[in-house]
Length: 202
Image 1 (cartoon, rainbow, N blue to C red):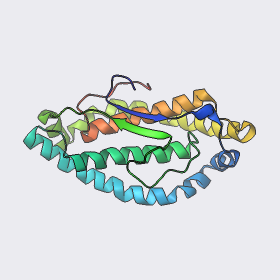
Image 2: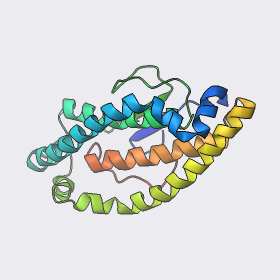
Image 3: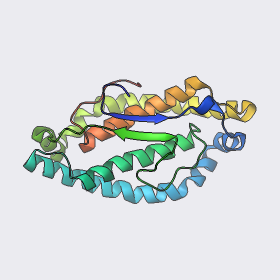
């Protein structure tokens, strides 16, 4: 992990991938169908996270302190869960993601290490009034483009997996980088850290 206090890393593990899962990915909806249980649960989890984020803004605005441990863990775990599901969808990892906020030993890991005891009241207030989301728009625009490019690259990766049993490392690194960037942006928006996310895949 670099200087930013949050990171999402997926173990390349030599790039060996399951050919059958690669074939399932070529017809994208098949892997999406296999992830349907996660999508259903995550829908309600993300709705709860939206309300949790809103409550968190008020807590920080009034106290100037970091989010309560329970809320912080819930929001952080939600980011990790969503990214682990995405990593499996795009064959960055073959092991089906667990239905957990903070699994131990899974090869796709979300880690955030900002232990600063205080948070910016001003940023929390911008969150309450929706300005914080506007401040994240530059990231959202870039991520929209990168997301489309990574979808094409990772779909091409399914074909490579089907014929070779291996995901090219360059595709893995790029896909992991896009997910890392998105996760960091989300972490900043929900108030896990006050440090504005870098425009970087690393």
